[in-house]
Length: 256
Length: 346
Image (spheres, one colour):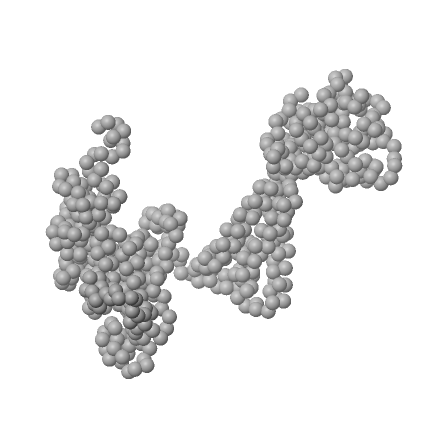
């Protein structure tokens, strides 16, 4: 399909002719794949709003892109909009019926919204499907961790084993999950791996820094500095670094 | 036509994939691709509910039996109208609050403004408007689902409107039975109270408690009705009066001022009403036990000329303690003079 501006591309303005193709060599083609990469980049930088916008752009290019739909749902969950995520997962399930990843995302939205009965039901449903994705096992692990079940780590291992190239991201997710559930020692291993394999991701360094800080490790400062060097404007990381360095407001106020 | 999900080659024209059921041709139908978003103000409320749900304070969802029963009841028009007593409740329970949220907000603002300005003509207008919005919300949920005829809709709105007007009239008496309001018909310069001001009145805790001189009181309408029967006093014109003499004291009027027990009262604090200035009592009027001398601009002799005798003054102005409905505690209208009334002593 021609783009709206294509019909003007052959017009000549004076003698200044830009060599054809120069622009296309400098600027990458803004197709669905480009926006998907951008979305992943912003997701790993914890800029979920921008990531969500990029996933919407993926869908503008290709409305049947599964990554676009699942990415939108995941970003809504990351933004804490669980009901909206749930509604949107339903919408995506109309396009991709019974897709295990969408069912898992719906389960995740329910679990984070403290609707555990529904979360378990959706998770059970997703595990019963074929072609399981790491998200299915990560969600399962989160539900088990919430119930303080012992098999959560098995689910995480399964997620990593079926992740393939996405293993660093899955490890990062697993680390975040364990860290959220206060299992810092196990989380630290996954987060170290994630930070090593995703050195350009502020989230990986931030989560590693937080986990190290919780365990009282001095490396936390270095990890948070790495994070801030990648994304200097991240207020949460700045706050965490101040906390780690004992330079919080009350510390300064008390003169310690 | 290849399925985007399972890559199965389907027959052209097929809407969904035969193998996996995915939608094949997205372009043939409008698919919304922008997700719904949560307004920022809602976040703390959701967080609070989530916490409560996490601590099992509120259930994840109502038990199925209760929900089914509610759905069955709520599907009827009458139930919809009954739930409509609280604006937006029926919509909220049916998960459709979004449809009427602006109306509910508008109702809230209009009603709030009406209550704030109560006692003025604008307030009547605003409360009327609030009733109209309320009726619209109630009818929108229950009757408009089935009624499409314009005349029937107008009829339904009118019926609901009348019912709600009745409800709005009853509600203050049920919710706050101890409070009332009324207009004063006397000027009291010392208290910066003028004729026509709207005062709020609180019911007396104990009718046997002795009220202070100068207290502004609302008299039970029945007392005035009795007076009307005998002396042609217009009960509609009188609401709030001022206690001038206490039980056991004597009153008479001299040079435009009350003289109580031989002491002349300040006319700016205890003004003598016009009708009494024209016909002052010839002898001292004695105030019996459990009664007060309540001064007000009673419209005596509203129907034709008549002579005001001491006996008539006694009947009108001596009010039994049990006939006093309440004590004025706040000057509500006009807005510029809104304040609590200082309780006088002696």
